[in-house]
Image (cartoon, rainbow, N blue to C red):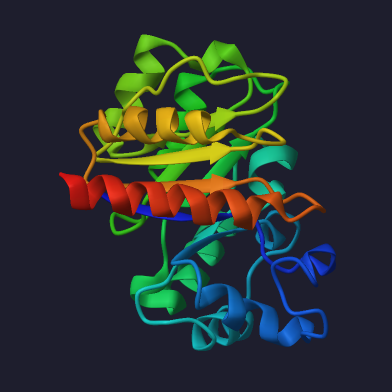
Length: 238
């Protein structure tokens, strides 16, 4: 299993002097980040539709094997609740294609007030290009039903595992050949990280994307680095 590890976002001035050099320019942050991690979750696209020029600029700053995981715009997930978003989805995925092989899974994070609707989800999934992969983070428990999970499996979409201080993840539910995890507690012990690694390796996945929370104390990069080291050591040990 290939495990990609990174953080949710990268352009945080609070990380200067901790993860980034003290005097680094904001324009150089992604390049610096890309030399240390192979993936990043982009929160910017939740608030703003991506542009071809913007994605091209990002792509030029990272290695060929780097993967961008964009968070879907709130215009689709929160404002329209996946309904009547054909135009938005068409633009989003067409623009995303400029990243080529650097385009990773798209995260669709749905608000807790949005209760399960199988018909809406099924119609929305029909808008996703066959070559694109998507993960869904449901914040309402109503979505965790057999019919919803079966639909995700049928379409090859991953059920995002989100772990927070307020709502610790109870288990991983696999719905695709790959996994998407957001480990967002304020801190994780070495034992916590190892436990998560073992849980991930127990899944029938070909690859997994693991993102740690952005904190002003720059804990995210520290935890991501340590998790990657544990994964590499585990891989070498067989």
